Length: 313
Image (cartoon, rainbow, N blue to C red; front, side, top):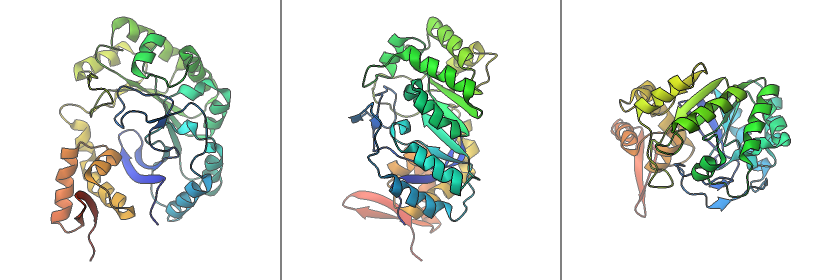
């Protein structure tokens, strides 16, 4: 069956082979981050709703998981903020009951973790990947641009409270933007907050592809290394792609399989594949052309838009 709400499995730099679950309509978010590679928030919202029927999501999960696929995580993510989905507990309960062998991961911008109700819902996950890009309200508003009033200190306090009750792993991402949150003062304050939150891992990231705003500049690899040293003795890793592409090289052997697994479920454009798999479009094109040459896939031009699909035997 074609899937609308699940995607992948995707080979993630952070979560291994991950089945994505997208419970929120495209670009529905409580932030409008300047660096978001999915583009500007077009459906701003700070209210939890269930626009997508929970039964439809469960039907897709049942169809995929009944084959007992070998995946590392089922990950709630997508081009929006997944904690805005009101029926999240229903899906969590279904997976825990029917497919307990799979680990659950949540990628969140952390805003709703200021609410005790959300913190309780997330206790059922194995891994939480929250974001924290600033230590001060001024920098938070400049980078993350909330769509409604947010008490940023309450967000940080929510993460601190969650750490005290959560038994799983917290891998906290900090997205560094040159000239904004990489000043000495901001980094020192951020380190203080991180020490109070005590995540299992801090993951430093920066811009790989164009963000929402053209003025956003990626931090240099040298700067990321300096921040990593500054944050010591916290456990810190850099997840941004190195200019030498060493992170990309570790994934090469799996990329062809990812492409085939993705278009097996539905034809995709090159840009869709690049977004799902996490490659630059030029890198993706190399793999696509190899798969076309080997007879595994074919290009289908529909009204000027090229879709890649499995080749019919």
